[in-house]
Image 1 (cartoon, rainbow, N blue to C red):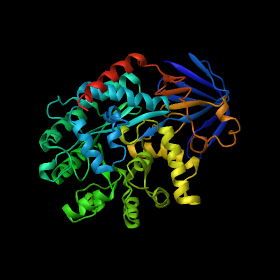
Image 2 (image 1 turned 120 degrees about the horizontal axis):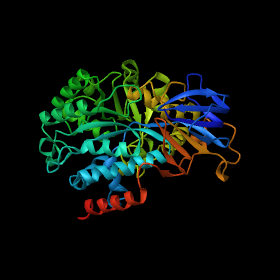
Image 3 (image 1 turned 90 degrees about the vertical axis):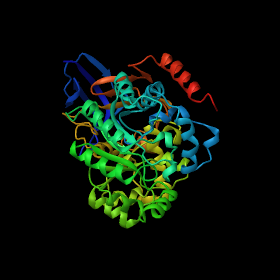
Image 4 (image 1 turned 135 degrees about the vertical axis):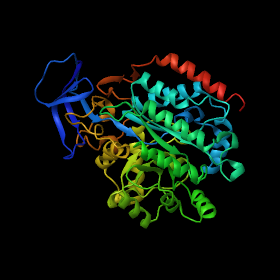
Length: 452
C-alpha cells in the first residue's frame, strides 16, 4: 500500500454535493483512492506541503480528437468553417499511421495532464484502408504510459462521398467491419470496475458521414454490452440543412428515430437546438459536451448552455479536436466558456463555480462514473494543485472555487495526480521523457505533412 499526504492545503475545492471549500486541511491518499480529509496528520510515504496551494478535482474532458494534434495551426484552414475545413483536412488525415496515433495521443493527453485534466474521452473515427486496425490500441498504450484515465471510442464513418457523405471513400468502412472491431475493443478494454483506467464508447462520427444502418446497429451493440454512445450533433447550420435534405428531419429528430436518445448518449456541440429540442434532451437525460473554443474558431455558434442548465440537460466540457482548438488545455477551455457565456447571457450565465462543476461533476455524469469528479473520501484520487504563491494570483484569494474561470491559470499545475499517482509535477510529465517524445512526435508531424 502506498500513501500520499497533501498537508495543510490552503483550500480544497471539493465539488461535493454541498460545494464545500475546506481551508487548512489535510488530504490522505492511499493507493488509488482518497482515504481521509480533515485536520489529522497521518503518516505517509510521501508528503506535499500544500500551504500555498489550492486543490481541485481533476478535470474531465468529454470530447477530443487526439489524432488532430499533428494538424494544428495550418494556415490553409484557419478561415474555414466546418464542412470546408473537414474536406480539406481529410486529404491529410487519410495518411495517418499507428505511429501518428501513438505520438499524437502522447502529445495531446500529455498537455491535458499538465493543465489539470485527469480523464480524457477521445473520439477517433478515421481508419485509413491502408493501415492496420489497431489505432485505438495505440491510444490505450499512450494513456498507460502517461498515467491518464482514458475513455476511448471506436468511432466510424460508413458514408463516403460516392454515397453523398463528406469523407473520401477510402476513409469509410463497411458496417460489419466496424461492428467487429467495436466488439473486439469492448472485450479487450472495457473495464467497469471502480477506479478503472480504461473504458470504451461507441461513436459513429456524424449524420453526414455514417449510414442509418450503422447508427442503429451500433446502438444495439452498445446497449447489449452496456457501453455508452456518442456522436457529433447540431454543430452547424450546414449539418441541419444536410439532415433536412437527406432525411427530411432535423438532426435531433433523426437521432431519435435511430434510437439515439437517453442517459447513455451524449452529443458533441449541440449548438443549433430549438428550445423544444432542449426540453426533449432534458426529459430523456441525453447529454451535451460543450466545446466553446472550437465553436468559436470554426464560427459554428454558441450553445445555449444557460438554458440547458436551467432545464436540467447533462452538460460537460471538452476541448474538441486539436485542429479546431489548436490546444489541449481544459483549464483554458473553462475560462473561455465562462467568458463566452457572460458576454452572451450576462447574469443568466453560469458563474465560475458552476463552470467548474460542469468540468468535473458534469463530465463524470456524462461518462457514467460515480468514482470521479469530486474530492470526497472513497473516490478516486484524481486531483490537481495550483501554487497560489506567485505574482499572477496576488489579490485573487477571495473565491477559490471561481478562480479557474474568472482569473484563469496560464501555467501548468504544480501537481496533477491520477488514481493516486503523481503524473505531472511543476509542468513536467513523470511517465515519459518529454524531450525524446517531442523529437519523435515532430518527426511524425513532418512525415504526415510531407506533401503539403
